[in-house]
Amino acid sequence: MNKLKVMFVCTMIFFAVPKLEFSGEGLQGIYSLVWLGLALLVFGGCFSSLLFEPVLKRKTRRLETEKVLKRRQKSMLR
Image (cartoon, rainbow, N blue to C red; front, side, top):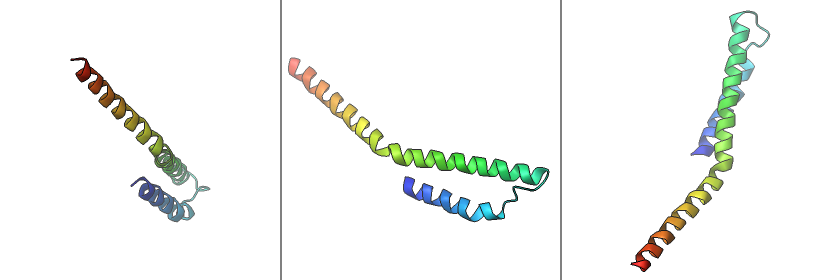
């Protein structure tokens, strides 16, 4: 799912950037810069979630394993 989000954001930026006027004066230029900044923040968030997904899966798997081991140890002590 995260790959799809990254691809969507890249496609959106690819098609929108040529249509934005960065040299425009007034609200048009400000809008273009703010839109690009927010789009890059969204891209960064999606890309970082894509990069750290395997790390989070490993951590949660390890925590679940530790919980199961603790439960087994407690049941053995009874």
